[in-house]
Length: 151
Image (cartoon, rainbow, N blue to C red; front, side):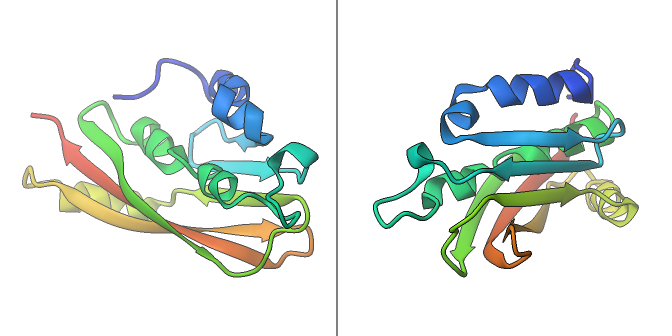
């Protein structure tokens, strides 16, 4: 089921959502066609861990549900989309502001439509890099999306 809000209203609302607001996570861009989003998190005193780097849970949270929400709006109302599972690989300490970008291309949409055409569930693993100010990948988050046509 697609959201009944525009990408602009979604971005505004998600930036006020208490878990993101409290961690300093901000959605800085959501395209009008729901196919591209950008999220950032500045390193602040309130989102550092005990060694002064980004708290790992906040890095993981930066990516929570963006692909699912985007796909809900790219696909028509005949689909269920859920984040089924996820994992994060920490590659380097996050010592500066960080960002993550999300993109949905036609190939992904085609794979989903083909994979669900027989009424079966479709699982897609999508990875997102979390990048620091020096364009160094500090973490990689992989999410498994569950997609199924509604009956």
